[in-house]
Length: 229
Image 1: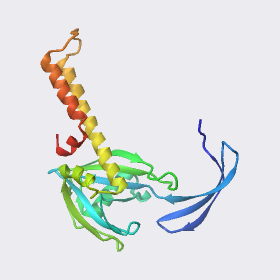
Image 2 (image 1 turned 90 degrees about the vertical axis):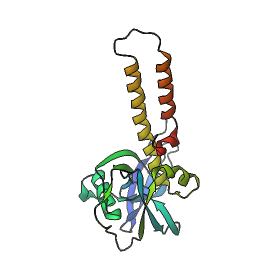
Image 3 (image 1 turned 45 degrees about the vertical axis):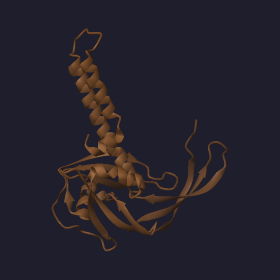
Image 4 (image 1 turned 90 degrees about the horizontal axis):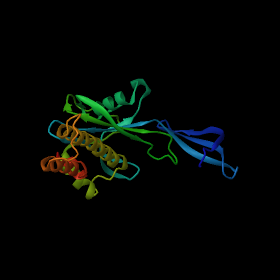
């Protein structure tokens, strides 16, 4: 079984404000060899998938220095300890970056973006019934275009690579999972109604079987989630 490596020593190399480079001396549990490695200490991130009542996704076009081109993304940013929680950071980032506010915000997933070198975690939130309440409040280093894209157009934009940001793709994956769970609840509820509690029936009527088959098919058709099915 794979074991954690022992950290013998750690020290900061350089602080770039946005992130810090850290040097660590570690020991392999398999070979007992001592090695020097580097890691990037980054604050946690939040990424928000904002949906309007008309099933439109609030997205942003933003120039990214890493790839040196404009990137189609979801709003997001750093978790600020002053916010008190990632959920509040998500609400703040959504308002600052787009000027939109949500009736409800819910966690739909989380991940470690790049555990080989990054220390942080990313939290993904679905923002429901978003409406514009103010102009965006951008930092001096931000240049953002806000666009609304119908939810049912997202699969095509993923397939034609108009959306290529890894974290954004993962946000839509988590959204699909959350909708799948909702549909599964519908399936379970429908089957319970079809077979009342306490019933001793060992077979189902043909119309009950058809209903269950249809619901299960819907639950497993991933792209249908984006078409409002």
